[in-house]
Length: 314
Image (cartoon, rainbow, N blue to C red; front, side, top):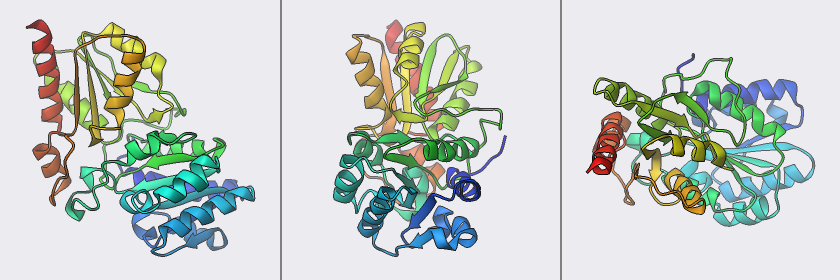
């Protein structure tokens, strides 16, 4: 298993795709060193376009290139890629069903010291609400590599949510990522945690902590938020006493709402608690400090698990 940031896995995968598929084209908006697209640009300069601080132009150019048969990755920090281009993405990519892969890096509170304006916590809400849009958030370096490669074979718009922090590897090369499929990382009997992105790691740590207190926790990595793996969500919910969701995103519009909507649609009532950003902006600080202060750390996941189980018994 390889430790590393998901943005790093993305950069590695792009280079490999560049060698195997001449139709792959990459666009960036002046931050290629940080998004890791620079490696693709160095090896394939004729298929790499640095658009500068012009994200709307980048998205529309990506849509145009896709119309010519190219598989296009348009990349920037998520706060710029989504925050400055909503109209262009909605019309030129989603509505037009363009074969554009939007890759947003530096997401969530984990980006830390860059501050609230750069801590993109609403991107899942934006993209999940767009018709035709597939939404993916890998849990580690290996899954980021595989998800990037899977998007080349997937025809249609997609958003790939990536992070800056180095994450502990949870998968090795034997893992096979599949769009639309969640993956059980740890089997338990008391409660199930549906987690995504960096919160997968926090949830696994929480499960380790709770094992000492004889609380048995299932941890599921929900790397595809749209389309959601509803069959697995329903099956695991029915097997457990309660449900937790965990995400580095606003509580509105992300994983928790996706899970809740699925349970409501199937008329399943179950004790439930969400670990997420509580509909407010954060502040400048390190990622771990912000996770602890704003309720996203492993300690907070463990507390949420104990709370929901206690309330159920009470």
